[in-house]
Image (tube, rainbow, N blue to C red):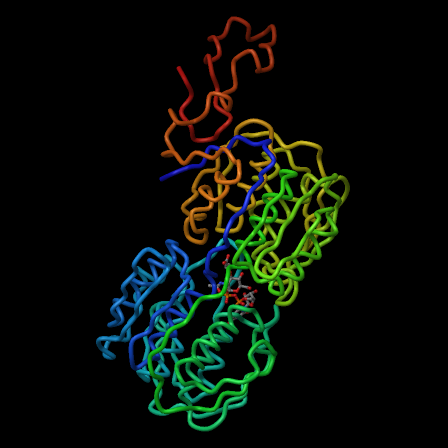
Length: 464
Ligand code: EPZ
């Protein structure tokens, strides 16, 4: 298992290219199951989750060829397999995206229920509601969704839930409805750019989907989908994370392969915090010459502030000059990053569904633990601004969703080392020396001498 050792305090400056969007690439790869013919995808990010999904698709009778340059070739060799096994699905929830394409093209699917998740409760009831509306028979037995349908029929489907629509649920129902007899209308469909990209991909294979990007999709069923080629959109969440890396360190960054309109809410908040933005046709530049100002943010479905940047904004606002309030209406419990940010010196308290931040002038490095993909990114951002060295552990979370993040950050002036998570790799600066400890009181002065060094990091062996 690896950890990142980050020396903070340097303003980041330079130019970076944004990778392809993880949350578009994954459902698009799954939707390739619906194609009768070869599919070639470009600008696919190099991520653990992409590799995991490739394994799932291979187990479902697909050939998946990655050439390491962001190009993936997918082709179905056999339409017989229909089982997406727990052993693979448990590693990545997005595997549930194979359910709709399997049901649409093969008329049957057996997909493991996705496991638990650190960002909150993540049911798939809306996915199943939509597929049942199309005529699928669905049961849940022994941790698996069993789905079958001799013939899917067009239907009027409402996909709204208590926290808005569902991104992967819209992708699943859309991927099945393209084969349903007649016309399907999906109301309260997700409008995220990644959903639009999946719909554009399916239309490129011969589907007839209208209304992409609006809450109402109209889908005219077709008999078959042919193969095709598609370029995945840029990753707006990675772009936001990189922009915040420049903002939190007081640096300046030029981003290429970025889609400005996908970032409207994010750019609005960054401007409110004092960042200065310049736009050119294919790039975006950010700088933060003055102090960071506080802001109140509420994560909402698109075009609101994405929940996937809420943790990163929390890190940024932790060092703003004033009080900020952060609320997440999509995943109300998505605050596992807060205790770790507080270990770095952030002053945050939970108040109902919100986090109240009292900005502090300086964070200071220590050892922290990542809990999920975007919380990892938030801890990296905080470490970039913190004084001294910070160790971020369990960064396998980070590798699932960021394409070589530390390499990108080091290319613009960060000092990040990836090392094995072993006690000897813990920086000396994170070891407490005995004279930093409170002096022994009189009644225990004859006790055993304290160990020479104590570690600030729980679970790391004390130096003798
Ligand atoms: C997608 O997850 C993204 N993942 C998530 O990104 C993202 O946070 C989320 O959308 C919201 O934008 C991928 O696209 C692979 P939802 P998804 O279904 O589709 C509730 C990341 O860090 N809900 O839109 O699983 C649900 O509990 C990941 O890249 C139901 O109630 O999210 C949540 O509160 C994390 N019933 C809300 O809706 C359902 O059937 C939004 O969930 C489905 C969802």
